[in-house]
Image 1 (cartoon, rainbow, N blue to C red):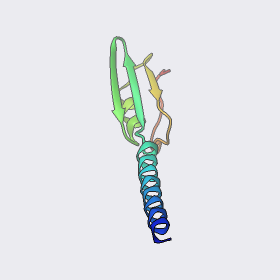
Image 2: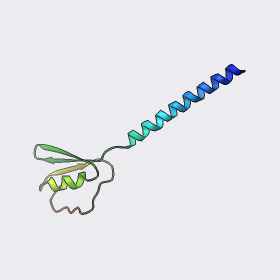
Image 3: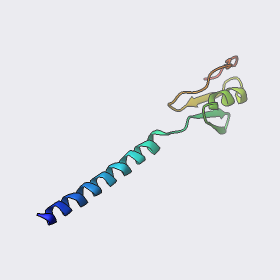
Image 4: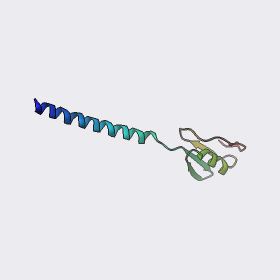
Length: 85
């Protein structure tokens, strides 16, 4: 009887350890960066972080393309006064 109890305890410990590793892995997978890609003629520039759109907009010229990743970007004090795509 003690042998089965000991095996059950080891199995539960192993299962909890695997569950902990899964939770830690999911946290890192969901913490993705915001990226804004600016295409100007033949030049491609990447901006990272919450202010990436603000930086790309400031560096853009008329006719440039800004591509945003998924996520929430800081848009306060952002005025789009150029013909960007």
